[in-house]
Length: 107
Image (cartoon, rainbow, N blue to C red; front, side, top):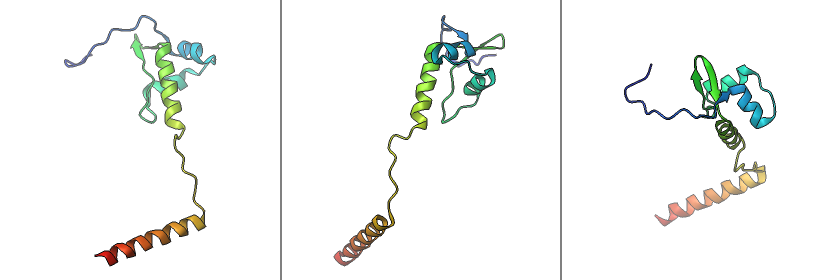
């Protein structure tokens, strides 16, 4: 079943069964249910791109690489701020209060 407004892309010629494609890229054999979950349930809004032909899930190596790179990027925080100590927090509070007082006096 297709919709009238669907944009059709050509089906890639390098499709493999999803488990085979993942194994070719990673060198590890993954469970079919794990790889199907990557395709069916997005995590961080990221989903493995697949084509279903006759009820069989296919993908290609480039889609697996894109998925792995996107998941890696999404799960590794790029800018983790270190926790402040109690002394640093108190110093910041006093500076903010002083700034508010000076702004109130300027009015």
